[in-house]
Length: 395
Image (cartoon, rainbow, N blue to C red; front, side, top):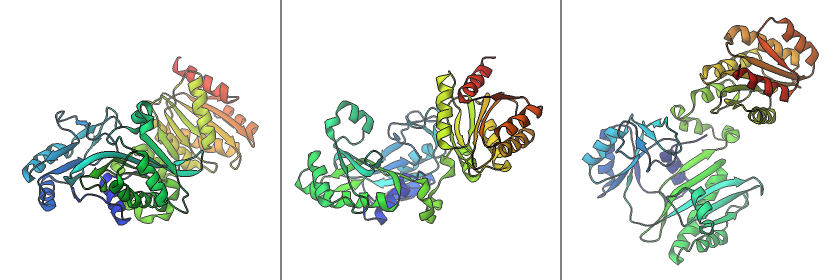
């Protein structure tokens, strides 16, 4: 689950992580009032969408307008906000479709000495969270890693113990911070590491993390993603979710208890089991096709869930064929076929449908499919299924 920058900063502040002063604005007048309330000579008006690269992004309706702008008066803030709100911001991460801006964050101007990068993720090979720290803030960390990897420092830490002060000093020295900035890092880095663990984050990124003229570290950005599997421990986070920033199909699938991720291909996949779904997508690509989605209905899917899964798949206009790949374990294959045939009648499937079944009662299930009278292409194994569904697109 992703949240907006301003929401991340509110959580940072509650955790004792230093942030600049800022005010949320949802109308041009609120942006003007925010500038006045900050009581400074300059401020920054920031578009709030779930994507990075906003400063380099441009609005479709106003190509001259960046997603992040420096303003020097309340009138200036108002006029920029007028152009930004309800306009579509296109960045490297949004793709050509862009994302409509509904909220702005007006933040105080700062005396910035240097921009740094800070990120925390889980290193799954080590089984530990890792702090990634770099002197090259304001840039894509992937670009820094490729061109100047020596400018990136990493430090793993124990989630139970937290990032220790000596580790913070080690990181600060590694990227060349002076003594005063190192003291600030000794306080800042353990706090953001504790936030990462306490809030069950899958990522916490600050780009840029700024070093002010008086050598203090401040979070000038906040890109926070929570682990969906841990949200039950944070009931209040439901209020932070912005459904307008999420794919409608993914929202719909989540409500039905389905795991769904939209992709760019044209072959819809309906599978039970995450590993089986990954294998299915791999085989489709191996035989020349492109999967349109990842969709795991789980081991105990019922008629309603299978029907909704088909509705979600077929609502995607790019889907030109569907591959159903089911292993009957907890749920028997004949039960799956009953749900599949009911969904077929309810939804009205107009694209080629290939079905591969294996597991408990598979022979009975295959017989049910053969006698159904439906336009369903049966496959004997996964390779056969992948080849057949790709072939339907060339027919």
